[in-house]
Length: 254
Image (cartoon, helix red, strand yellow):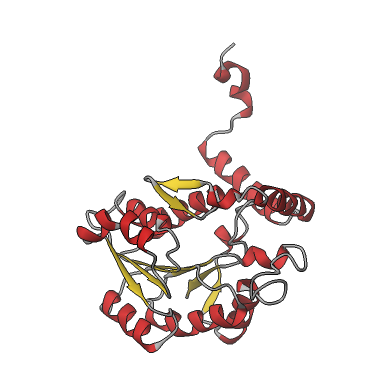
């Protein structure tokens, strides 16, 4: 018996499908037991560097698959004219942003900022840099030079953009990024703050890093939101990913 014959009565029509799915999304986002199990699985997968095992268009991307799909949904719905990312690592995230933009636009305008851009990243990104789809700039993402570079890149852009923060994950640095860069983006823009998941990981998990429980991107987001009422959590996406790193870290500029 075919799939349709087996399950046709259980597959709702389009309107009901969307209603049921929205209800399940909300329930899943509030399921604490499920979330705890997802964190346990994240810890187990981290033994094998699960987040480092993927590529996008042949370029290594340090991102969980959940968040790759999530970013696709955000980009497709927002259709940003430009995308800015802090933290380049091996370059795959910039290529992801560029390729997603190409689905709805004839041009790709992506800017990547990082304190140190390694030669292997420059090599991996060379094709995209040469034809102008991606620009990279070596600088601390919070200093005046980086801010000026972002201003030049945006060039008084009036349509929403996407800002991805994925560099130093300490509360102090992420808060500085939010304070420095958020005034530059237009209303309706979305900010994806990576690694808010750190707050849910076991205490002492990041012994070799300057961040951990109560000092991480999520604590920075919470402080930022308390002081900036023109930003809010984007509830449609904040709790979508089980194995994702951006939970409660997706903001919209109102």
